[in-house]
Length: 99
Figure 1 (cartoon, rainbow, N blue to C red):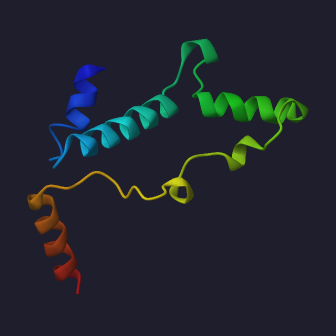
Figure 2 (figure 1 turned 90 degrees about the vertical axis):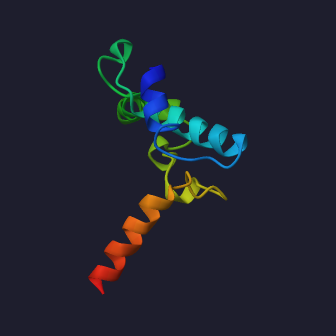
């Protein structure tokens, strides 16, 4: 797990401050845990398990879990991890080439 986190954060992006690193690390671990398939849930992700329980017994829930999925509408003021200069130059070059 430590190698996965390191490869996805520190080795891929440059962070100006520790707060940027902490925010990206928190987002990465949340996404990783959200998408992880668990043996105790018979190979389902936690979200899939909740949705399956919702379809079987919707009266046990106050809110519809299908409406609670994190996504673009829940980002708030966070835009994403910072990108390296080389990545930005590559993206700008591709955009200029398309025009």
